[in-house]
Length: 253
Image (cartoon, rainbow, N blue to C red; front, side, top):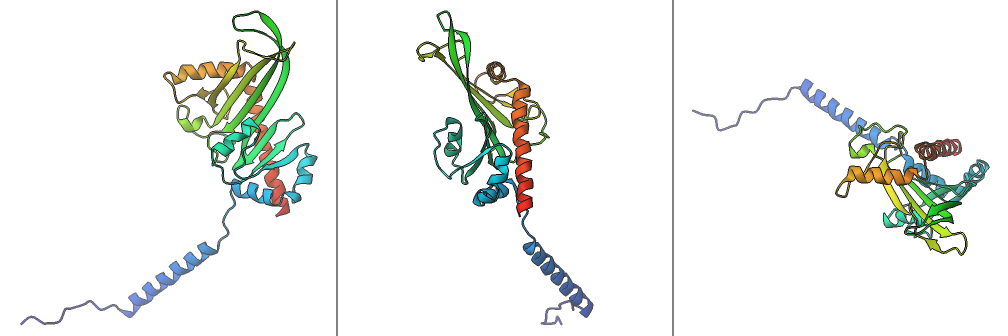
């Protein structure tokens, strides 16, 4: 006759002790992880410096830079800084301006360099003759991903989008040296493409009917005003300032 009771294996005392030990270890590890300090990323450091800017301003100005902050969700009068407003950034921007007016912007670490320069030139007016003008050039050099720290050396492979991590835009305008009226001359316009921050030689566009040819044209327009060495210099200076800011932060933490 079958038994009316279901047979269950008995758990020995040794097995119960092992199970209890494992549970205790897991709980201990969980508590340790929860209590570990969170490593600050580049965004955390910049925001902490902005919140306590009075601790750092004197040292930064001793480097030769004017210190300012672009508040949250404020649309700047500076055309180059309006992209933060358009991208719906959620934190203020730390800006260091050099003696020539070039601005190094810090968000998730170094994010952008921008400047406006003006100089006399001789250009050929479209449909006209050569003329003396005052040329104005606005440069924007910024990371393609606002929420990624800048690369010291881009590790991605050429050909993939992540390899071209910095966008450069140059806006060229010319004005008559006689009356100051704007002149449409050969070379005027906005030129932009993406570069690899390792060298600012390799470039790529990702839209349009012929992205590769378009990128060559845009690169040509940009390089009429700035060489690859100059662009790389601006980028490397931004990285250098980032390291100096972080060292200053560590010294005051």
